[in-house]
Image (cartoon, rainbow, N blue to C red):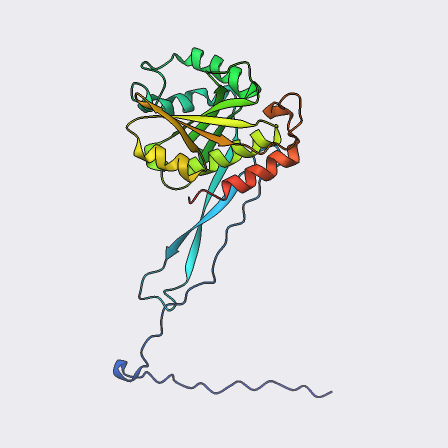
Length: 256
């Protein structure tokens, strides 16, 4: 029997080159674009994840590459537990031409108001990374309260979340829900002076009707799903798949 013994490689001393002869360092390696995929359980509220562009510094190899910073945007119906958060959003408006009240309501009174309007008419909240950014709700038409097909729309957005699509998202979802629920018209009463509010509602399709004193009234003609319906459908009786589709569309409007 013959055994073969592997030969060892001869030891070669590494040659150290002078620093001046080394090639210049290459650009920093940038990992591929990273997308964070968030998965929520069925028991959690569904939201919409949006991305923000974060540009790498100029010294990187590919300065035009971006990372995706995900922000969770949810536009949804509310419940009584959202009362304190919405009262904080509403508080800065109270006592100004932008709100119908001169004094801030008590929390319990406000929660009772939520119970009244969220189930019968509609009340929505927009959250960005689980932080309330704004809300909207419907009330009866003060000039025709018995007409269930005609309502009024109120909108309130935190100052730091204005001009990023929160108001548009809230209005879009509420409009879709009203049309699915067969309502026929909605009014906005804009306290003056308020050029920002006037411009917003005109951009949303509202048509100014009359301007009296310190209030501008604007009307939006809805397109009900069933124009011959005998009465409107309450928000919580809408088909779930239609409501979820409308939520998804609304969340895409927020530039968070």
